[in-house]
Amino acid sequence: MSEAVIDDALINDLIDDELRDDVQTAESEPELEVELEAVLDEEEKPKAKSKTKLSNKKPKTKKVEQAKASATEKQTSFDFGAFLTDTFGWTPAPTAVFDRVLVLTVFLLVSFGFVMISSASMPVAERLIGNQYHFILRHAIYICLGLIAAIVTLQLPMDKWQKYNGVLLGLSIALLVIVLIIGKTVNGATRWIVIGPITIQAAEPAKLFFFAYLASYLVRKHDEVQAHFKGFVKPLLVFFVAAILLLNQPDLGTVVVMFITTLSLLFLAGAKLWQFFGLIITGMAALVTLIVIEPYRLARVTSFLDPWEDPFGKGYQLTQSLMAYGRGDLFGQGLGNSVQKLAYLPEAHTDFVMAVLAEELGLMGVLSILTLLLIVVFKAMLIGKKALEQGKAFEGFFAMAIGVWFSFQTMVNVGASAGILPTKGLTFPLVSYGGSSLIIMFIAVSVLIRIDHEIRMTTTHTTRRGAL
Image (cartoon, rainbow, N blue to C red):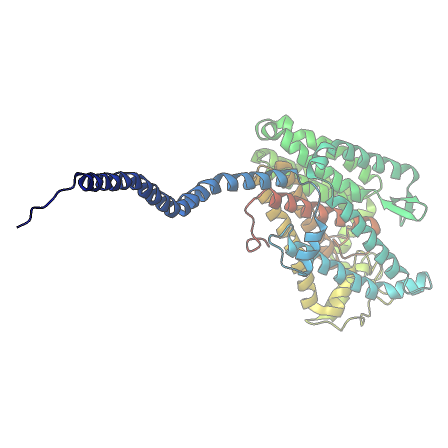
């Protein structure tokens, strides 16, 4: 049996190979760990990114909301692009920047009025001017001027009205003084300032500017109005000065409208009831005195109580108006088929346009136009309520004053033509013929739209679904 010969050199080589393998294994293990960590990092990166995105979303959203809020607060101009878009629905708008129902209702009232003025004024224009389209063309011009005035008014922030209300009040008083000096007299009343082709009825801007002053006063002296009699009396002294100037024209109807609106605002501002009722009693006593001391006013009241006693004298206008209402029945005689407008009913296209409307369109026509006016008044009061809730006291009182003004003037106009109230010579808002009245009514409506617009712009989460 042969012996195994062990080669020392071979053994050393085997030992060196094993040691080399161990070293390579030891060196490869960190590389594997690094590779495993890299794989894990790749898997965790999306999660980390998503967490980073989620964590970054909130600050970004806050910044966007803050930017939107600051942009909303800085916005003072009326966006006519959004206005037209939201009105006619050319493209869907994300939010409404104005009250669409109010705008469309005013548009219907003005259109309704233009049709009725066209129908009622043609006979009298043919008789007086020789051109049956005379009053129609003038009324169309007044509507265009009213639209221009409304567009300009929409660009004025409400804080400008509040800041310059004293200047506006002074301007209205100046107009009432000027009209007594150089005014034009028609039918015994001096109410118009004639400047070339332009005729201004001073009483119309006096109403709007006085209401702006009254709203500002109630904001500045709100606590005084509620607590002290002095605060209650101060605005009445200003009204008293304006009333004296108006009664010298004479224009009792405007005085009554301003008095009722003043009472309403003082009541809404929280005046004490004993002061409120004391003022009502004083006002009624003054009204009765003013009627008794002027023969023509007393004749109007007595003719209102029994117009058929003298149907061809002092009761002539009211009896003709009542006949127009009677002929109208439920659905009327048809548009353009009025008989009373054919030289029978005086002032058919101004103070008594409702009588012609009742004769041609009947009870349903009267109810339709009264419903449209009721919507405007309701919107004005609702806008005022929203403004007060948002702390915009001046805007709230101003909007409510316009609502009371429109409603009471409508009541007097319709009541006079229907024999319910004495004749006062007040127009139907946005319907009757009359340049100064129509333009001032346009401005008043644009003030309502502006107030509503500012309310919506300060409400950051207004949606189209919630906007009317």
